[in-house]
Length: 356
Image (tube, rainbow, N blue to C red; front, side):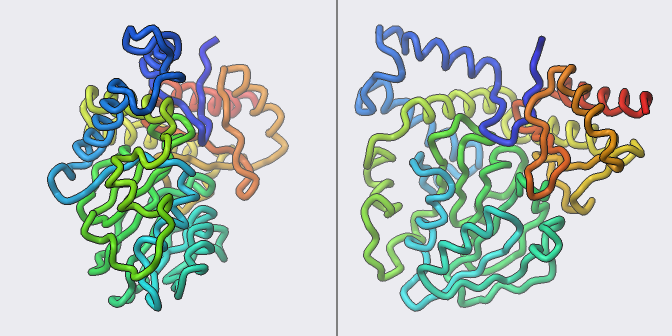
């Protein structure tokens, strides 16, 4: 039976990426060696790293605009530390928007470095919406936000105009929609939600922002060191970078971000329409802030839980359970999720409606 993987991460990837990656595990580039055993200094892998970094910038429209792309280890959680280390000046301050668990984690780490101002938070409402109407101090070293919140199913559909550098954690919606990426000073994204397997993090940074903190930065945490070493300061996660590269190629070969956004909009519209139409279900996020990557919803009557769970599992659906912070269900419909799988979920929801 075909499986429909709605997991929030590690998550679905394109089938052709799985196939190419699987072949590379057996024999990479007809070398007689597995991608898992080749040297990260080998000509073959250096080419992968260089091309992956260049392709990330190309897809974002940032080629030749003073940005560097890096593939680093430690997940997005390590960027919670690297960002203030590299951008918050001694005796300076940073502004943060609190929209969920991962934003709160970034705030916690930034407070170890200096004055960290939370300009707005939706925590009191269990993060069911994106705050609005907040002000960003003009003297902040940077403003940090999280574009999409996997747990609570919210997404920033607009970004506040500001004169300070904008840092954005795009872990769960990177490459899913068109944005003017040049408005961001630094973007980071764990690969495992929308770009590749767990094990690497993409960082895109405007190089002119670096080297101004007056801090001593440990080398492994210094973006300038990683730029100088072309993402090879330490041994990178070879397989994760390679598979991310394959995913970026797939994206580029299938119309880029513009084409992907149209597909993602269609998937989100299909599923949200059913949630709003079907009297057995209700969404958890405010309508205007709903995520197009992570759709969170509840049964209106929990007595139907056992019946619904049996139906979706029988249909080959996987990874639909919601996070404990929200409960209910969470359908993650990342780039690689085909609309046919979303239709299967909609059909199951309609089947439940007919049977109760």
